[in-house]
Amino acid sequence: MDEHLVALEKRMQQLQEALRQALTQHDTAQVNSLGQELTRTRHAWNVLCGLSEVPDTAQPEAQPGEPGLAVVEPNQDVPVRDQVHQALALLTVPASPKLLSQVHQAFFSSPLNTARMTTLRRDEERSFRSAPYGRAYYICPALTSDLLSPARALLALSTWPLEQRLVGPLTQRVHFLTSALRLADAAEHLAGEAGMPQPVQQLLLHYSRNIHGDAPRGPLDLDALRRAAAAELEIHADDDADTRAEAAQRARQQLGDAEQIFGNILRNTARLRRTS
Image (cartoon, rainbow, N blue to C red; front, side, top):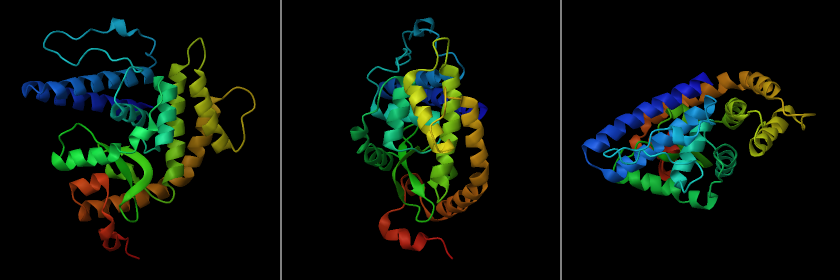
């Protein structure tokens, strides 16, 4: 939980720095985009800190000369790219479009249009190659640890370290357990006197069934879910981390900036296979 808060705080600092640069360059479109993302990142931070019930009207409105800093409600017409970022920032691990939509529905009150995510990764890569690092972040694929190629149907954030964006034989289970812990922490802060929102509870019941092996008897027990997830994670985490660290080292040695983010092209994968 503390680690995720630190990551969100670091992200807010990055956005504030990028926003100042955009203001200096009089780039209104970038100012608006960064300002909206900063607002949503603050909202995610508030959710994890248990401050989600604070009304948005209590926050300062945008002042003249500060375009894009007005509060944006999570259920407004937020671009799919930003919605994917919200869900990934909450999970902190690569995820499928289906899971991203479920998480966004549960925690941000609106589903993601998975059909529109089909072209998102290609658009992000095209943008990066035309103007490298022109955006504060890119939605990118996770990369396979053996071929360093795009993993099928797994999205990540370019701002994550390479190790965090790589997937090996054990990684999907490790990611499942890690996301269970993240979502359990976030759900605990969302649950007020009215109890846990139903979409959040249904999502965590799915995690609980897949960790415990059957449906829990009685109400969802977040502490039991966390204990079970942490215990299994301890079994797999070290081996998985070693695999991803080795793959990340190869990627840094053999791939350029764009390929480290979006993956190796297929015709070159043979030479990048791990040596036996």
